[in-house]
Length: 444
Ligand code: FCB
Image (cartoon, rainbow, N blue to C red; front, side, top):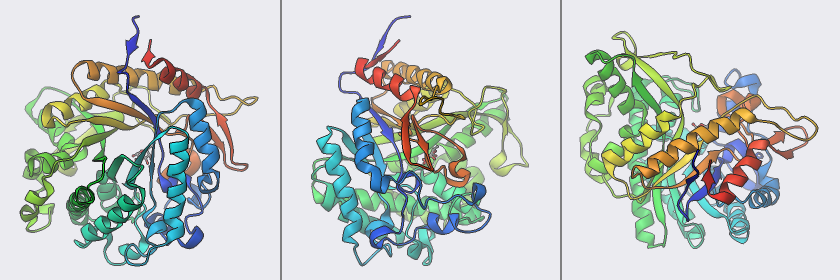
């Protein structure tokens, strides 16, 4: 088979998130986050696992950056824990908190690795939750003030900013399904949270533009391709509504067009907060890039009794350890869909990867399945590039095994293995393979 080359300046990266890797979330004056509280609440996470220690990246960051350099990684996407910087979410600043990220960014710059900073990857300061968190309209200002401070502190070196990571997950896993922090089960709250996250994103973009920094800002969205089980009108519509509800349209339609997706509004209009229409002009605002996260696809059937009329069927495809079907062509569908619908200036795959059961055998981890998964998805990304998607980079989730939220430490997504007892890092075969792809800038 012929070699598939990537553009010369293609940014091959790896991604992580603060609460999943750092550990010691209360160190040096940091405040509690909603994930700290949630994971410390009985019966919320696998075996009661918490992010108290995780990969102890807070103390091992130099070693971790050196490891990335060794692998030849060109970019690193990480997130900032808001409650490290503002322990109460607003007001008093904790200098030791921002100092950690300042040192991390310096370390990356010295290693020649491009930092991509996510401002919010789910660890909301718990003090803000006490005031309603994402359900309180004031959160838009709290977030913009926090973001602005970080822009001022790191904006001389950081050139890529992501406002929010997967706002769908915050809204629906956190407020409708109760699986993530803050653990609520209220569909009205979930739609309020969608809307307030969009308002917060928009105000952070304003703050960024006002700082006049040299850099780019975007948002990262979760996606699962939604294929209709048949060509019946009802199944086609169910797949369309699923796509609008679960994927990028819920957020990009407001950002690029100033309106929520139309088929979704037919089934969900009543859930949106009263008067939401008045915010849409503010939400519509130019961003510099779109971040796409993609892991899996779904087969959809119409079912009037199910939520939003959507039922998901098992297609019988091979699954990862998360129980997610492996469906690489869905990545192509999502990427081309974004480009065709909104024509963003740039697109990054900000997360893609897979959990499998790994084990260390005489100092090595032979994770052939992960290599197969990544290779299949790289090919789809390449095809999308050839077909005009302005894809500029690809971040593998994740640099290392970490705290997989409600699944605790039971799922391993890393290309580096973590021994949680000793904090020893072991380079998996997938990392060696990835390193070689980066070097060649091509797949065969
Ligand atoms: C995404 C999250 C990320 C990680 C992966 C597996 O939804 O953004 O933190 O948990 O899934």
